[in-house]
Image (cartoon, rainbow, N blue to C red):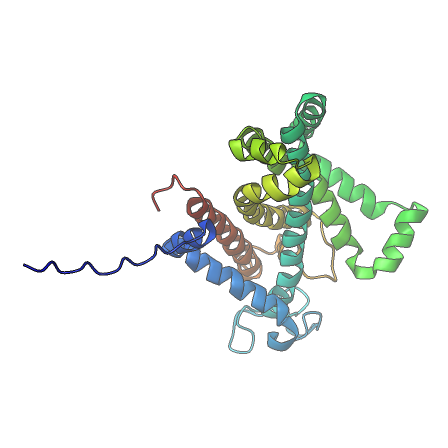
Length: 310
């Protein structure tokens, strides 16, 4: 009996860890939904001049506190400004603050965490103690004090900066202040991962081949830290937007005429009972945005964690 030749074996398809993570993330339906929400928010912010139905600064003093209608779906505020238009333009500032604070915090925390975890010893001790000191400080009261001092300061350098930056001065000040108080969580996460990764065989092999510390940090350590950094970045964006909203609501954040969801809430706090739609819509936008980034971070964490059962 003649043996039937076996069909030629097909070569194994090589898939990178990132492609596997993408496929796992796509199975996380809640994270995918909120990723679409975030993309829509970004598009809304970028196209604000085109899709905004009215000028967000246009006042109609003869029609104050108008309720939602066909012409003004979200109603009008205390100065007769269209709330929908202010929310659309406010998304630009809120997302700008969120992404900027997250980028600066991640950069600072990653650098300090990598240095502490990779080199260890006295450098690790100094960075770790400084990180713990920053974590022990009451963040919100300090943010209120520093933001208030910088906003009211008449120092020549601060005045020159405010003159040059114009209406964006408070935005830049808030981004810098939030970044200086937002890097500690990233630093601790990156330090912990660096302590584990520096002891693995591939690091020893790279050292044996003559790789020096800068190359070890950039080419071998940093790529393996990216999953942790990416997840932390998404959480930092939502946290920064929420903190900006709280500071602006308390009157220490971004001041008018720049529209943000936080200062829209601040302007409406005295009329919330008579005209509840005025604070409802900006508050809803903050809630949706923060939830979107948190669920996105949750989905990324599950997708990038090989131990997850996603």
